[in-house]
Image 1 (spheres, rainbow, N blue to C red):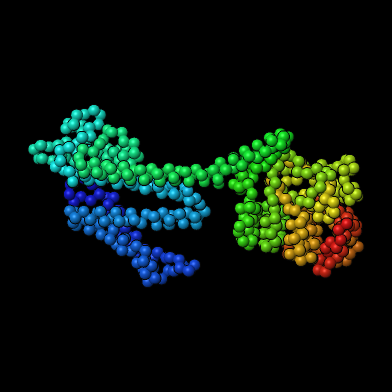
Image 2: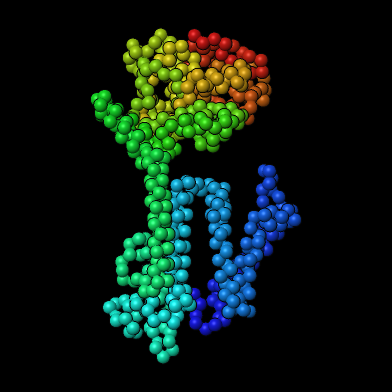
Length: 536
């Protein structure tokens, strides 16, 4: 609003004019645009593009600055033409937020737009009510403003919004302390009308005001229908995609488990897993979400999400990026807890998964009764004990377990693994997926990955395959490093880093086979460790 004195320009109007003129200049010369997937920065092409997308509208709205020189022409109204650019402005804001990783759903965007336009409509209706009172009905004695007497004042008294002056034959504009008070009463009138509430404390007093009141009521009914529809879409989206959807699916799962009389401890484990899965990815089936995407994009997303796990495991961290992506895509999150779901697997269980620990701590229990193991497990019991004597019975982030399934025909587990913390995150890689990745890498490099998983756990080596007595050899230290370089793409490691934790530095290392399983690993060209040629 402006004050009563003619020719006085509000500071806000001046700032708006400067902003519009600056925006007009930048849009016509500097605002690049995208054409056929490439960014165009040529000023001539920018101007041509701007002429096609609203330059005339912006130029006309900038003419409102001329009101400084001709205030009686009411050129300030031309700036209202900028309101037609609000939809495109909202679209641009949504695009910029999307580029910064802020996603706004369609239902939320629709609800926000309707609320915004509803607020703008209330402001416009309030202004039009005041325009009718101030300009059109200036010489009418009874208007909505002269009849509006809040706080119980009588009509025509100083307590009304405006007061009739019989001598001048017109009413004043505002009888309150400030124009702000009069605007708030006008806004109250528009709110009660557009919301179809109609308290009745303010009402039209002339035929023109009654016609405008009917128009406002019809517009308000349309806004009300739009708001109801937008809220319905928003709530429906929350029910199908948000946390409400998760609770609904979880309730169905609870009903099923109750109907099937599943033991309560198993129910608690299942619910704990789903709660952790939802907290981690906001979805119950991550693979189903990615299935519609092309495979290269699936690999990139999986690697971005599970890269932390790859970095924790030195063997996986040393692999080529494309192999890391395929392994990340094959990893499946499993969650355990010392309270809800402590057992990862038990001795004698059959399983074909390798578990990579991402967080938490687990303990290993070796069998004392070998009757639950198969023949291979019983024959390898001593070697399995040597392995855990080397790496320890407490494993944490970066360790892996269950790798004995690589060279097992039965899949019988040789130890019991139990969660020891409130939350243990372990990513499972099936033997089938590992075999497929190894086939893509070729027989030699694939065999070396298998051997690395069997021989090293995090930074500890626990199996030395076909290592002769170094005291009887005459080769150089460089040859020794090359001999222990397990993966051809890894950086050669010094001998002391590859020494088992339970092996004394001066001890003689004698020739022996792999301690995990009964696989035979004959030497292969270019590798001192060779590759598994047969799995018994």
